[in-house]
Each structure stands twice: as structure tokens, then as C-alpha cells.
Image (tube, rainbow, N blue to C red; front, side, top):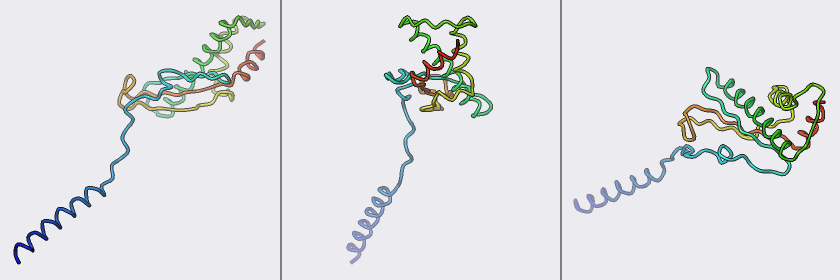
Length: 151
């Protein structure tokens, strides 16, 4: 009788421990790699893309805004590179349109750019820890409109 009880008790303990282990939920694993767009912006026939980066600031919102402004400035450089590589000349009465375009794209009031994705690198997976990354895009047709308005 003792042996049956001991066998039953051991089986009960083992089976309850298996049930307990199988019911434990694990938290979602943290990303171990940077998003692909951090290394290489998407190529698209309809949009220009750029990435903006910000280091840590006292206020998280300021870091995200700084990354967005830098992405818009980078977007301006991308558009200028595209224009010069295609020999598109746009003359303005105010002089250098490159500076005007970058200024227009960096303007926080600009409604043409879209923030597509954000990524916070808490652990320094891509670079230094606590950096903020933002992917923005601008429709190519709207970029043409913007260029024409700089005259």
C-alpha cells in the first residue's frame, strides 16, 4: 500500500510540474536587430525616403522631433541629388534652391512628409544606445510641386 501511494505521489508531483512549466508565459523577446530601413532606405518609384537620427535628450518627444527634422533635411539632400543626377535645372530668383529646399523640408509645418516608422535603439544594437531613428517619405509628385514653388 505504501509503495502504491508513493508511486502515485511521485507521478502526481511530476505531472503537476509539467503542467506548471507549460503554462508559464514568456515575455515577447526584444528585437535583436535593427529594422532594415535603418541600413538601407526603401526604393520606390512614387516616393523619396530618408532616415533621421537623434541621440538621447532630456525629453523623449524632443528626441523624436529632432530625428524627424533631420530626416526631412536628409530628404531634401536626397531630392537634390536626384535632381542633379537627372540634370533637372530649376532656377529661382532668390539664388541657391538647394538651401531653400532643405529649409522647406526641415520646416516643422511641412505637411508633405510622412513619418512611416520609428525605432528606439535602447541597447545599442545598431550604434550607440538610446538613439532614435525615424523613416520619412515624400511623394515624388509633391516634391516636384515644392520645387516649382521655390521660384
